[in-house]
Every structure is written in structure tokens, then in C-alpha cells.
Image 1: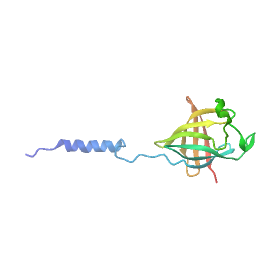
Image 2: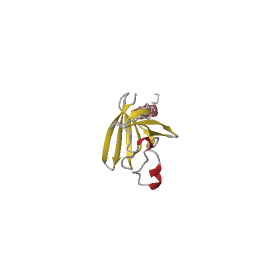
Image 3: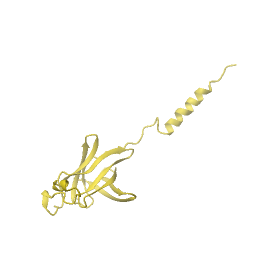
Image 4: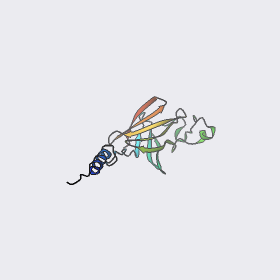
Length: 147
């Protein structure tokens, strides 16, 4: 009589369970968000690109000039030292890192001087969804690809 090897059956079940749990299967990566994007309000173009180990987005063009023109300063930042920096080139998306199917980081609103937790995800070839949150309250905008 030959002895069965039950450990082989268990090894096969364990490998199958690992595939179901994602251990052996390819995971879904977040779609790239790099590029030039027009804000939902249509007042600026934000250029998103790598910034060291993370991704950031800077104001690269005003489509609607701010009150003080292209030389507008960050007057609403609560830190007086930062109120002298120019809005043009200012990073408003910072520290974004890929997390499964989206990007997490911080978004800065130069119109209020406030920063929020943020999530960005691709919405097709020509749009991204940008969400800023305080606690459980979130605001979502759709930014379109700049031409």
C-alpha cells in the first residue's frame, strides 16, 4: 500500500488561497496622474510631476489673472513667512504617493490658505478627480487635461 502525501494537497490549497488574496496575482496600480490639468474653476493650469520620491502639482499658468496679476503672492497663508512667496510655481499638491488605485497626499488652497488631506485618481484619459477632505467632509473637483 502506498502512502498518500496530504501535505501536497494542502500546499496546493495554500497557493490557491494566496492567489485569491492577491499574493500571487498582479495588483492594480494607480493610473499615472502626471500632466497638465485645468482646475474645475478654469482659473489655472496645474502641472503634476515627480518631486523626489513623491508626486506634486504646481501652478504653472493662470487662465484667469489673480487680483495682483502674475506676481500674486500667497497672502492667505497663515504663516507670515510664506505670505511673500509667489503663487506662480507654488506647489499646491504635495507628497502624493501611489496607494492601490489612487494617489494620496495634501492639497493647498491658496484662496483660503488652508491645506487638506487629498486623494487624486484618474478618470479616463482626459480627466482626474481631485478630492480634498477635512475629517469626514470632502469636496471633489474634476480637472480636465490641458491642451
